[in-house]
Each structure stands twice: as structure tokens, then as C-alpha cells.
Amino acid sequence: MIEILTPAQVDRARRTGALVGTILQTLKERSRVGTNLLELDRWTAEMIRDAGAESCYVDYAPSFGRGPFGHYVCTAVNDAVLHGRPRDQRLEDGDLLTLDLAVRLDGVAADSAISFIVGESRPAESVRLIETTERALAAGIAAARPGARIGDLSHAIGTVLSEAGYPINMQFGGHGIGTTMHQDPHVSNDGRPGRGYQLRPGLMLALEPWIMSDTDVLVTDDDGWTLRSDTGCRTAHSEHTIAITEDGAEVLTLPS
Image (tube, rainbow, N blue to C red; front, side):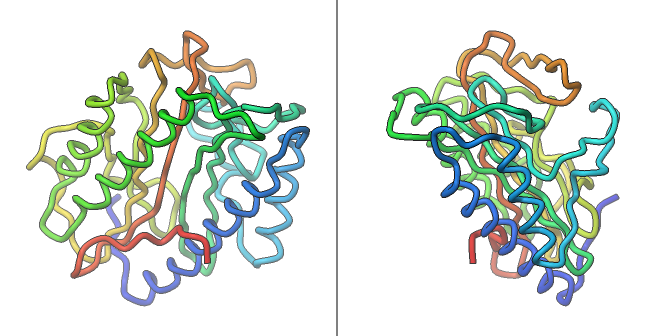
């Protein structure tokens, strides 16, 4: 289903997006050497509850996962990149942590992800991975405007990733979002311009470039959810929810 939201729904989505962005920023500030991933999950649950919102993850049970996700935030460390299920693990100096969060507030969802390095270490390749996904995300957002097509966004994202020399996995990518978290259209992280669904005001999309440094092959952890690079290389993931307006793309998931 491709959903076109009303102006009132988009306005509510602004509040949802600001909440998602603020929670992620708070979690980033609390992610220190020694922080346990289960603590991050508990803090997320508390912030969602205090805002009167609901998690899009706790009961989420798609075909690619093993049962309901059962947690409030995705926590992916180093070689993990997507759907990282929180576990009893303490962060170490130099870890590359990705946090992915989706919530629903007043009937509208928003979805965002950030990658960052914990502690004082700054491994050069980890910095480059993160910066590349952020640049690719910015390129995808810049291409999003009424009349553009999904392939234009995918091409913009893929150009940045491929020019940086990273393999691109096409199994998972961005998606439509609205009253539910995952909707059509699918937004691949590479594609041909001029192809696919034509963007129009009221459409909301979650764009999410993600990469692994030396492979495009994923393996699933024993938890049935966490997706890792098959070589053990590091990974990064950046995501924003945007709304297509008459003037272009509005980023909804910035911290308030």
C-alpha cells in the first residue's frame, strides 16, 4: 500500500519525527564505554512511554525475523548493521554503534537511524563508513521532490555509496511510512533514475543507506534477528523519515 497523508497527518508526523530524533540523540549521549545494550533498550521504553507514544518494534514479527522483535530499539554493534536485537553486551571504546528507532504517536509513525563511535577512539574506516552513509542520505533527500521518481532517489544514494567504493546490498532499503511503519514503495539503495513511483505531496518515506566495508552479504545471528556482515567487517547505517511537500523534502526526524 502506498499511502498519501493529509496535511493534518503530516503535521502529526512532525511531532512523531521530532520525538524519534530526540530519543536517538539522548541515547547517543548516554552511550558510553560500559553502557549495556539492555540499558539503552530500557531507557528507550521509558522515553516512549513518557511521551504517550507506542513502539513499532515490540510486537513486530515480519517473515524475515524469528517471532516478535520484543525490544524497543535496534542496537547494532560493529559488524552488525540491521535489526540488531538488544542483548547483555557492554559497549567498548571504539565500538561503532547503530541505533534504529521507529515509534507511532497520534496514529502516525516515524523511523530513523544513526551510527556513531563510542568513547575516545576514532578508527579511520569507521569514521569513513559513517560519513559515507550520511552523505548518501543527504543525496537521497536532495533528490526527493514532487515529480521525481523513486529511482532518482535510489540512484542518488547508490552513486555516493559506489563512488566511495562500498558494495551495495539490495535486500533491504528504505520504504514508505505513514500510519504504519513499513509501506510501499520500497526505496533501494541503488537504482536507475526516472524509474518507479512518482513522488507527490503527502508521501512520506524513510530513506536508509547502509553499507558494509568489504561485502554485500548478510548473515543472521542466532537471535533470529540481528543481521551482520558475513566477513565480520564493520558497518554503518543512517536514516531519516521525510515528507514530500510542494517545495521538496522535509526532514521530520531531527531532534527537537
